Length: 252
Ligand code: MG
Image 1 (cartoon, rainbow, N blue to C red):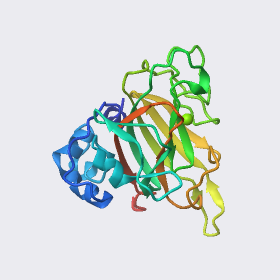
Image 2 (tube, rainbow, N blue to C red):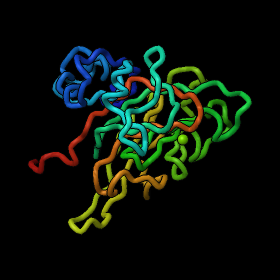
Image 3 (spheres, rainbow, N blue to C red):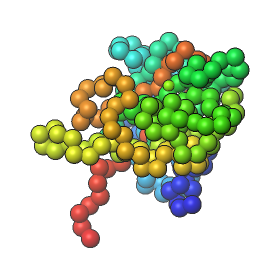
């Protein structure tokens, strides 16, 4: 396990951010001990302080950082015991991103009588366009692209790294946005690497297009993080994004 995967495989806890009145304030406050804890304390401070905390356990975070999908209203999700609970529509981060590392922890409910897509369904949409499925897929013999950890409808998870419903799980998602030339013509598809509970379940997977019809602007533009309300009370906590530059320096 290399340093990065060791780092992002750790379960982490987001601490206090001084003020979440604005995302920029959250980012500027990121040099606090809180963000160091959020990133597992293993990234150098100079990197960790670049992370944008979208939810650290407080109701104020929801109002500060998230909108109800399709509106300019604050997100309706309630905060219970430090977790956001899906309900009242999808939520959309106010801040938009291009390339990034996203950390998010989730818990699916126990719904023994529900089947398939009705069993603990939610989702994490990258740039609002590409869904990494959240579902209760624990115990299934075979999992597909609609199961938890799937790039929805396009790529099944490589490993069944699931925990049981009602247990906290975590995603660390490295996303590389699609590339376009000066004429806005696609030159490279989006790519995603996903760790579920520390296990790599998507390995630099090429995503050949959005997984649903919502684009949140033009596809070459930055996009938000969207969390899905699919009618099941899935919970989320410790949501943060480390934006990444689109490339390094050219020097050797
Ligand atoms: Mg879903």
